[in-house]
Length: 371
Ligand code: COA
Image (cartoon, rainbow, N blue to C red; front, side):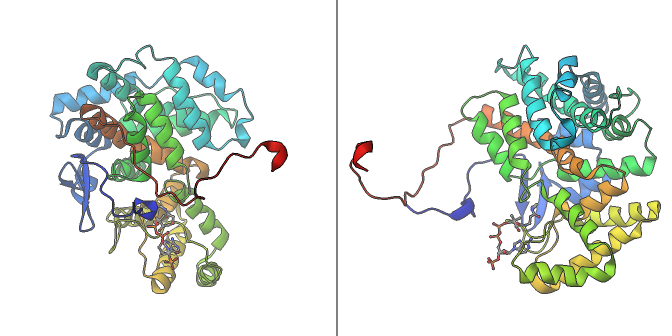
């Protein structure tokens, strides 16, 4: 048996949800550029879950259902107060909170299609409340209830800050959600599929996926990018900073990709948004530093930025705490996880690969007093 480190190049499943072919990303056959420029996040959720774009009434119904299901049981808020919330990473809190939600859903073990669709709506809706309530409760603020007249992206920003966002903020955030929604068999999506392929429930699949997304080689990279930008501090420091890191064989977060070779098609949209939003805030330095880092890094390594690089300065410009960047990734990607979980259930087989054993040969047990 031979193994491939990191399963590079291994085709592990068939899927009709999203594809990466020749550096073009599509959701159900729609180019991500087309969707980023035209579709709302709710349309994308519908697309991923139904494999077609919604008609007006279908979209209106989905929007209404998502808002109706945003409230969470009081016990979930209470649990945020049970531990030193200011010392907990929000991705750890989110992982536990999604698992906890499953305990309060009487249909969590019901594996029918109908129950799973209901769970899909509930999880997609409630994840907004989990992230925003956590962000507020740790500052001593009360959670904010959603407004029926706002869309998904606007509600997220409103429920986090307590004030209604500007149209330009909503547009940027909505686009960021569209861009992060699905990405073929990325690590967290694969994790979700492996989990539910045992016929475990949807809450378990999403909880497992959040754990996988958290790491800095995956979704956790966006928070690390912001940390780097803060350390760099000014455009003038960027070149020396990057060269120093590379000389120490350190990775630069927000660059490189397992699949893309020429570039991540999502990055250009975020770069454009970063330019616009940082200018609006009068904080152009975050964009300018990012551009300089890209210039220096790509000259050294010839690896283009990925989705996480410019999303950092976008979220920062929206006034979002840096450790909430990865939870926001989860708020969007959960739509893709759910699509993949449902696809897995619809045509399931246990996912159980083999390992190329490299340990010692056969050994005889030695009693403890003879070792
Ligand atoms: N900074 C510096 N070097 C990088 C790099 C980065 N961000 N990404 C890849 N490389 C280098 C590696 O050091 C390695 O060089 P070597 O062959 O000389 O040892 C080579 O490129 C291949 O990298 P590897 O980590 O094996 O590629 P991978 O396909 O396993 O990993 C990522 C892909 C995304 C995990 C990797 O590019 C990375 O760690 N990027 C930073 C984290 C990040 O932004 N993650 C978000 C992804 S959307």
